[in-house]
Picture (cartoon, one colour):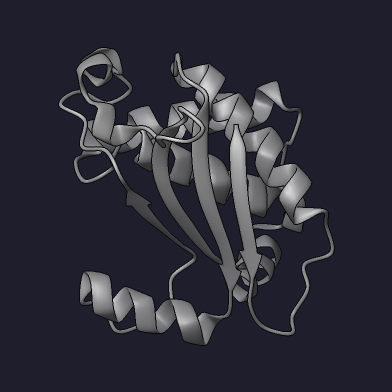
Length: 164
């Protein structure tokens, strides 16, 4: 798995972000049964920047905790079978499946960790797991979808022993 990591803004999270992101992405991809080596871009940014992105891409005029930009459209969440016929989904140099981009607000990681009464590590890991599920076709628009995603997120974090 290749992680392309970038960070903006002066605020630093009190944890090894790149290392933790790799662990969570690997665990999430194993959990959903991704049969390919994959590539993910991760940007850690500020509330101001993610606010602009949220407005630009989703039409929502406020900061958010995480944005996910999948590069692949899945007919069925977590079903990778159709990708064998889709060369355009793979990096021609590395052969890795290009999953997409994750953008996380460092400000929100700290705010939400405090609000939910758990560590910044747990909040960051949760947002990464949540986003990887989006990058592999899962969503939470409907109640049934939300319950499926919540269960998967919880189980991924439990496997990693990153608990509340």
